[in-house]
Every structure is written in structure tokens, then in C-alpha cells.
Image (cartoon, rainbow over all chains, first blue to last red; front, side, top):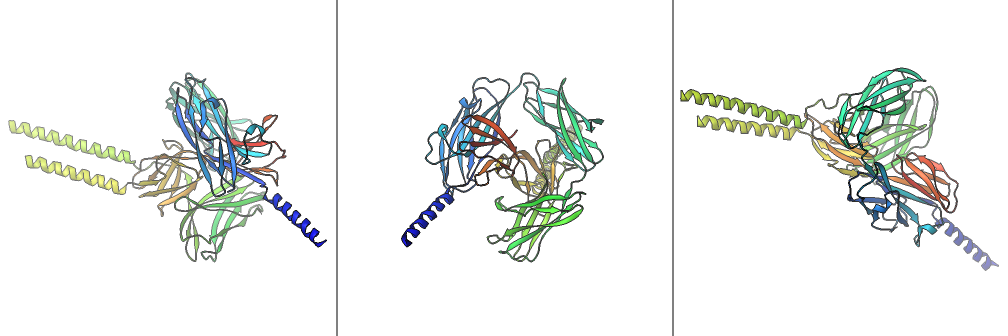
Length: 400
Length: 163
């Protein structure tokens, strides 16, 4: 009876172990997510891609190609096995483009699919799994003039700055491109502004900009991108006014290197409504750009017009003394505020220093190195001209 | 006369040497990221010398630069989204500019226990479902966002960088 009981228990334990050992999380990454090139006939080019073992597990991936350019792509390997100790593996694919393609965007998609290690054929895969895709975008120029643009709007409190990056995707140069931006509030037009004007060569990228002053509120911008008689329209909504959340301070008390540091982030809710869900996260980097820590707080609610202390815990057991870079992010209700901080770690202290990261008001006020060299060269040319004139005149005088 | 010319040329060489030495010593020196560097992290540590301001922009004209004030350190890090960027340092004079690329990372996590998908990359992704019946669009997921799914046995969830 006793033996039977032990036997049944052993079977149950074995069954549970099998259940536990079946992975329940599948994760896969690929970098870069996209390579972009301009078309040229019969172009041959190779690309490197890193497949990332984000869960540090033993697994296999199968590679395949889709998209309208699939026939022009060849991959170095069709199946790759990962060990848990391998954080990434590099593969390459090459594109051999045809003589001609129709104007516009053409794509190839390299699919990387997590598969069982005994996998042979993706058509008979009968399990739930994940794929990540690295894309190849090939742009073929449009005949004539063709301009693509998008609108980036920066809220500066009492004004909105419109940045419109543009790229010429046509075969011909565009002599004049600019934007007319009409601002609306609830379907009522509040006026128009105009950006700077630029000329743009085939394949070139440039940026247009304009600024609009207004009261805090929600607005819509209709951006008409006008170039050599053609118009493209972009519509975008934007807010004006101060951000709802601000980081007032970051500090650590009673710290000793090797302990778990309690980082206190003091956050202010400036809005008249409660923030029901806010979370602080911090990425910390060493001097060689290596990621040292990626830490998060729990979720907090912040009452209206009040401050809240959010705590993030950082285990410093394997940390050395020195200076670290960090990126602090407060996520709240689908929005976020960010701050870049420097952290000085000593044996008995941890101090945070803020790094201002603002849109430059007046960038390039200083003389550039190229300008400095032009001035030096100009100065020397001038000196030599004076010297030659003086020498010629002296020579003439002597002849007389 | 010949001596005067020689003295004049000597003075010019000295002046030129002095100016170049001054420019060399006082010019900002950019160390990292090197020109053309592809960084597969969404955080960049800029390393430089002789500068107190860093300008970063997505166009060579620096028409809308982000400016980092760095008065007391020779390196500074900032979080950045994937794309091509240009940077230069400003001290007594401005340096030449360099370009670098923040590589995009597409990452998708399927948690079978919780029946969720999560974007674990650094760009917005477009997720579609591939079944024996065909491919259909599912959701566009922002970075770190989770999405509940009804798990069936033959589905491949595919994540790719969104437009």
C-alpha cells in the first residue's frame, strides 16, 4: 500500500515537473527592424541582422522571406539554434535587385520564427509561436517631382514649434518647398502661418519649421506642403500648455555601496484631476555605454495638485564606484516625462545630477571649425596680398 | 631685402603654426559615437573633450537641434528613439559634425500562461496573426505595451516595425 502511494506520488511529481518545464513565455527580437535603401538597377547589397535571445533560453528559429522583393533576397541560413548562454546571433541576407521596378516603395520581409528544435517544415507548424520581421525597404524614385513630409509638433508652453522633415523622392530637383499651416480649434480657423522656403535635390532630406503662439488648449494643424505647384496635406492634433507631471527631485538616503539603494523620485501632479496610474522606470548605463540596470517602481496614484514620492530599488551588490548615466521616465496615463541624470556612486553616497536636454533656442551661435579655418586662410591671403603689393612697389621704386 | 622677406615668411609660419596650435588645443574633440556608428541601444553616451554643449539633430543643417548642457563632465548620456542622427560639440568654437544611427529593435513576447503579447523592442510594432486560414492584422503595439489574446493551437503572432 505504502509502495503504491510512493509510486503514485512519484508519477504526479514527474508530471508536474514536465508541466513546469514546458516554456510558457516565448520571446524573440531582431535588430535592426528595418533597412532602407534607394533603388538603383541591378544593385547588389548585403545586410547584417542580429537575432536576439531576449529570454536567455535554448531555442531554434527558422528563417524565410516574404514580400514583393522576396525573389531578389537570399539568406545565409535557414535555421539557427540558440543556447541559453547566447544573447544574440548575427545572420546576413543579400539583395540582388532587378533592372527596373515601378516607382514607390517595395518591400522584402525576413521572418524569424521560433520553432521546435526538431522542426523541418514551416508549413506543418502546429503550435502557437512568435515571429519577428526585419524589413528591407527599397524606394524607387517617382517620375518628376515628389516630396514626402511629416509633421512633428513641439509644445513649448505658450507656443508650438512645427518641424516638418521633408525628403525628395522624385527624379527631379524641387526648386521651392514650404508649408502653409492653418491652426484650428474646434473647427474654427485661428489663422495661418508659413514656414521657411528651401530648394531640395533628388533624394535629399531637409527640414521646414514655423512657430505659432497661442493659449493653452487642444488644437488641430492642417499642414499644406507646397512644392513647385503641387500640394500635399498633413493633419495633426496638438496640445499647448504645461505638462501635467514634473519631476521635482531624485535622491537616495543612507546609502552604502553593496546595499539595495532606495531611490526616491518626487513627482508633482500639476493637473486638477487625479492620475490613477503612474510608474517610474530608470535605465542606468556605465561609461562604456553598457546597460548596468533597468529598474522600475510599483504603480502609484497621484492625487490632484499634489506631490508623490515614488520609490525604485537598485541592488548595487556588483556595482563599482564611479559616474553613471541614466534615463528616468515617468509613465502616466499613456503619456510620459523623461529626465536624463548623472549618478555619482561613492562608498557611502549616491548623488544625482540633472542634465538639461532642451530644444536649442539658438544653436550654432559659436563659430564653427570650418568658419574658423576659412577666416585664418582669408587672413593669410590678405597678409600675403599686402606683402606682395608692398614688395612690388618697393621693387619699382628701386628701379627708378 | 632678402633677410626682410625671410623674416616675414618666418613670422607667417610662426603665426600660422600658432593659430593652428590654438585651434587644435581649443577645438572640441568628438570621441563617441564615431562617425557612422550603428548603436543597437536606445541610450547614447556622448564622449568628447573641450566642450560644454552637445547638439543633436536628425538633419545635417541642425535646424531643430536638441541641446545638452554639460558643464562638468566629458561624457553625457541621453535616451533616443531609433533613427539617423547628427551630433557636434560646442566649446570655444564648434566642432565638425558626425552622424550615427540608433538601430531599431523589433521584439515580441508571447506569454502563454497569461495569454498576452508584449512589445519588448524599442519601436512601435504591427502585430498580425498567421493561421492556416491566412494572415490577418491584429494590433499596433507601442513599446512595453501588453495585449490580451485568445490562444489557439496553430497561430503564429508576427511582429514588424510599424510605419
